[in-house]
Length: 396
Image (tube, rainbow, N blue to C red; front, side):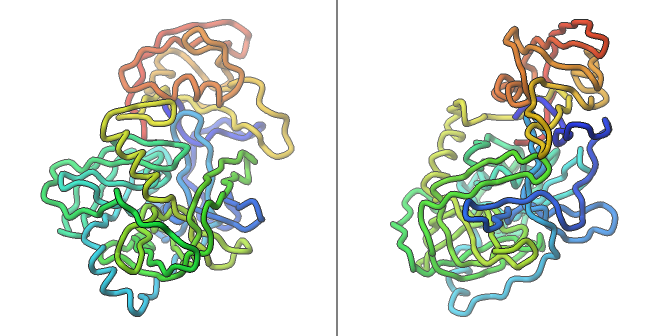
């Protein structure tokens, strides 16, 4: 994701800068194919006013092709420590990290969890935990210290990101390279930064109830789905802030990266967890740490054009047939090139584009400092072309 800011705007909406995520119910939802809601367990935005702990399940995207998806907003409630799990939790907790992100373009902050991979401060988490972050701070549970962090890389479709903690050394780590075989019915334990409270991880227990599960993320305002497959399903009641935390066996072995929770109806408590198998997440992390970029894996900082594009697939509207600009961030490369709301991007580096997603596809691998040629038509139908140097954008 590398070119736009703020979630794209639905067709027909006012052309205005992005606003903070809503603190009320009825926000975008995440649903499984069987109709059960499967909302992200990780993003816990606090609005600056009131600092009320609420969940919007998943990050609102603030870079290229950004689509806003998330869980209905609910009041965060404390985990209840599970009997018999305390010793396991104590063994795993020193390798867990609490993540707090500032979402500068949304005027909010969010919280999540991570797994410490290396003593020098590489931390594995979900991409949606850090998506849209303009600054990131990570507290290592093992030593209690807080470090500024940057995104080393991410896989948007796989919902995996690796952070680098600046100035970290000697951290306790979790092993993610040799996960045991998982069986249905096996007892598991989930740890995480529930409610964004930090400190000793909250703990819930459950059992594996399914393997190879698929869940579909859908923005209720856009109808645009995104699917994660091959997940572990468990009967564990994840809470906002838990995304990116470890799902472990009774032997303390990490088997998954908690990423979503589901409830049968919109306002019921989450009763099931979905986790990315840790072997898959570790393989993505290895690509990132090895600086091996691909069509899926983005290495390093996110490039930033500074335009907001009209949302695709809004319920009741016709599919997007053009990359219509609905907003421009002041001071961004797009603003300096003279682009304004109402323009339509027609090509990127000479390649025609016909939708916001096609813009994302062409800019998604770009980095800050890269030069890109953008052609657009203004409201009067006049054609323009400019070469822009991408700025540093928000994460993910």
